[in-house]
Amino acid sequence: MEVPILKIPFDEVDADFICDNLKLMLLGGKLAMGEHSAAFERQFAEFCGMPLALGCANGTAALELIFRALEVEGGSVAIPANTFMASAMAPIAAGAKIILVDCDPVYFQMCPDDLERKIRPDTKAVLLVHIGGIVSPAWERIRDIAEKNGAAFIEDAAHAHGAEVTAGRAGSLGRAAAFSFFPTKVLTTAEGGMVTTADKGLYEAMSAIRQHGQERPGSNIHQRFGLNYRPSEIHALLGLAMMKKADWILRRRRETAAVYDELLAGTEISPVLAPAGQKPAYYKYMALLPESVDRSALKARLKEEFQVSLAGEVYAVSGDNQPLWNNHPEYLAGPLEFLPISRMVAARQICLPLYPDITPEMQDYVVKSLLNVLRACSWEGLVETKILL
Image (cartoon, rainbow, N blue to C red):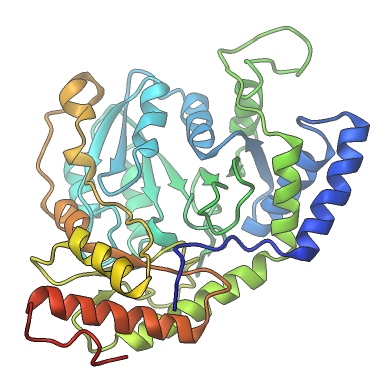
């Protein structure tokens, strides 16, 4: 059995909807910031339970729009060390310095104790990244630390379309939230991003910044510094197709995660289980390997012997271990620290394939294959690699 890393959930019905509307769009001649972009913004705002949403070119642009509108230049922004580097690049591009915060060992999220130790008088924002589509159980404490210190609490929800906690969905928990629609994401438009917020002033600032600083698009009058972060109509059309099946996608991802929970119970692999009272989006199904396992060798053998490909980790290199900081120490708000939990997570984490079309039979094969390879790698020559299959 071959199990691919990813299968994007577009089908024949989606293809017909997209192609029919694409023809009308091409004949109509409106390819940027038209009716599809506006409709996608409205539907996504409603999906998140927010009054306002602003489409843009990609998830990194969504983050940068937020930080430019917050005017973080000259201050610092706290981010988790366990994140994709776009979470750092966006505030740097907006003129801020970075505070790297260690993560917790259970959910791989920003550690509130480390944040409380490191937050500074010049910290203008705290960015909580919902790693793997799970919202940190400590999100309210992290929000309170930020607000107590006069910093905006911002969500990087690139992994978390539709993730739910008691207070609401990801995208509705902070002053603003950034989403990505890259092909690997829970909802995809190939490329694209979105900001959600209830702050009308922030929304208006971001609207101008995404259009070269024009408060009235097309006026040729530039009140602010801005660049081109505009969304395209083509990508928005894909987004509208996604919104039609968003609830189904989330339901299937949660059902798939529940199967993995059961299959991994009592094994050598430690899965990241959903926090109590939460419905994650399951961008990734995350787990920890036992200590001292060579992950690269394990993944290569799993692919070669069983045709099973594991998804990319979130993330395989800890933020404090990135060469950027040695090359540009001026981007950091303080001296670079070794962050032990983030390093451990980066070394031991794996992500199992998870997408709406994967079947329980495929998942059973993934786990049995993984356990075979894990045991063979740990005790080479003592375990027959076919005992479970």
